[in-house]
Length: 298
Length: 259
Image (cartoon, rainbow over all chains, first blue to last red; front, side):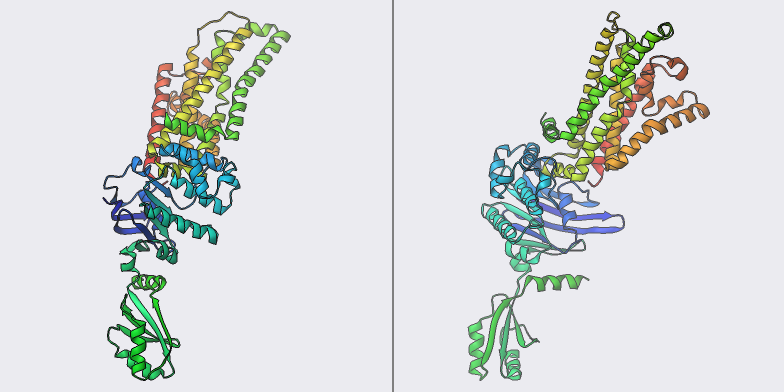
């Protein structure tokens, strides 16, 4: 079963094309990150899936079926901003959400505790801080323990502790077997939390798939030695390396993911008379990859 | 029923709603009490007046009088429905309701249920008010003219549904309220006058609020003011057609637009 299948989705706002033929699918049990800068179409995409926006063309399926309100009741969704009745308390707001979902009324105390809002459950929503509003919205998504969750920028407005807590919560939910679809413009958020990702830019889906496949496919080894010229010549001949380039004071040697061995490189240089004074392996950062992908598209 | 329960949860603890509703219902009684007292005082001071004007608060006139007086207050439940609906747009809870699992249709239907309930409450309070003032005026009870109770219901539905439509079309309470008041109090009368004078002497009666307004005219002098008014059945059909149109446009707007 596929949780969500999006096919050739287009959305136009007048002459502006917010989505240009987006196609992908979300496998069950994944943490699926929709990554893209502000204005790339992430919220538009999720808005269409939640039926608050109408697609210009294309289609999507939820749980392999034509989507309807009963599918949305099975999904806990936080879209864009926390939307609650300002004049009601946090708890009373959750009661309304549970009433619409048709489940979760007995679950309110649990979810409030989970996001640490039990003490403030009787305060009006309008008196909440931005972070508390966001946490209440997360609590609302958890009502009735849905198997699928959709989070749009879930760490928006949270302090560093709140951000760490939310990420932990997402990982924990995933460990429980839940599928999570998460939109974010924060690259490291996706890198830290997601198993799968789709990268959107200006409404175009640049790539999608398993995070390891699409985001981390190269190892970079940084080297330095007294004799830079000799080091350069040596590494140019190193088997398995893809390319060599000088980056600042370090020489960078690129390998395919998982193929760089620091011990071998050290031995190789030493046996040829070059003594390294710097040797470090780093994964190609998501940010670099992201900029690469998006700059190709410009 | 569950949808209505959800709507109840939204308004149960909304103080502004209850204060406004309470004031409105008290106003129905109060405005009639004022008119009742004025008539009583006038008759006391000028006994001749009683022979010129039939007691508007005696049966069977009272059903029409209370309906007519209350019609000026129908802007208040209109304001209530505009505030409740535009609140949803301001808080974006109309989106959240859909996200959480209501269909767009359910959202509109639930608001329409609220319109119907406000109309029924208006009708019940008006009926009780008419009964009490009728009894107070001393004449024996008469059920003649009780058809006005149905007209009150129809008029309430017309006003409050139009308010709901305006709230959904304009989303912001300020704009919806201004259009509602300006149209209901000023522009419809102007258009009515112009159409009747220059196009056809009955055409103006078929404007959105005019049909139900004319069904409950001023308790005296209506033959002069509405001299060419169509039959009540025609006006009822006209009002029902407008209710159907409001429903059609509400659904079309809310079902097809981005929310």
